Image (cartoon, rainbow, N blue to C red; front, side):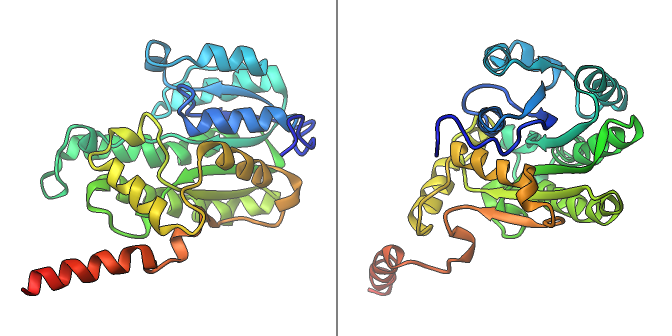
Length: 278
């Protein structure tokens, strides 16, 4: 990868949601977009002002920070009005927002707190619907734009420690498909990137994350995809090179999603089974 980039996003403007600190996937996406010539506003919830270091990323990329609660219609509407003033019509949106409240509070799936569960869905999934809706209603989203949401294979397969977030990501991917059928009338595409377990602040808040990470690392032929490579892959989906790709969940996971079992797991499993039979 050229340090100066290839100009794949030169002239394009957008909004990137979810960057908090250097461990955030959205942070790496922003760096890749900037390298490729894209200009953008950064957004996170107001509480992130005291939790993260977004000012440093904004300074590095010459970006505005538009603080907004992604569960608030008014906040998101105001955000896109401000984005229009600064950038005109926008060409891309990146949704990298997620929080599992029950997961963080160590509530097991069979005893979820439903108020927290609703909050998880609202933050992690419904926020995507709200963001796209207000981008359209305010007239901020240009025809031919691209929208990318970050997901995880827990939307398709059960990982017990991932708990309610599996439901949230499944809803997120459904929203991607349904919006895609509507947005296509204006040449706007929307896709989800199903990313490997990544050592982000949010990810490491999941009980058993280290086991999820290690399992992915050992099973994937290429190992886990890191945040920087996710940034580069996302650039391709925001660029005109993928102008006919929409409504897809695209696996960026080193091959994990296509694997059944690898030789690395077979011998220990056989030994464990033999020991259990003795």
